Length: 172
Image (tube, rainbow, N blue to C red; front, side, top):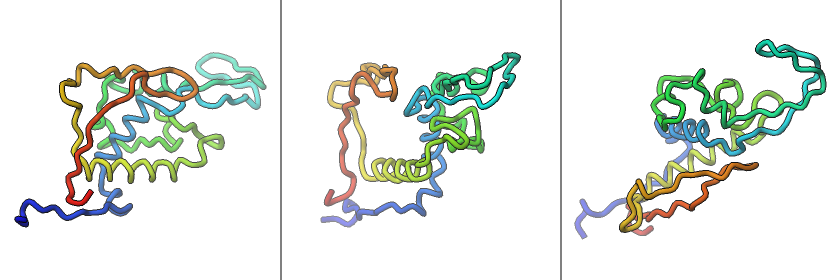
């Protein structure tokens, strides 16, 4: 077999991920538009506070709508458009320090597995993108895809995404 047609399998590592800024921007944009839990776990106010001119009494149960925060026109330009570039020169992160992007909550009640989960998602997604060419099945066009979601405790698509993964490395 000719050497120029033969591909050598390459395994990505965590150190490779640190240099994949666009991949990280794509993941942030996905979490902004499609948070795993659209409504975060309820909280209870510890004392009476005033927020935006409204008085919230002590012991009031509060529900945070992460889905609506990710689509806020006050925080995001063209909030309904998938645009990973918005995170390229932007330090906003989803680990709970930036309140315009809180798919996993913030503060003491944020998800304790954010670091583990994000590292796992980054490495898995990078390996999938690196190892396969992805195509729609024969006869299916992008306009045919139903991207509607079911709104519930967690978010998922109504119709499963069917794609064809073609290995790009010999031996996979």
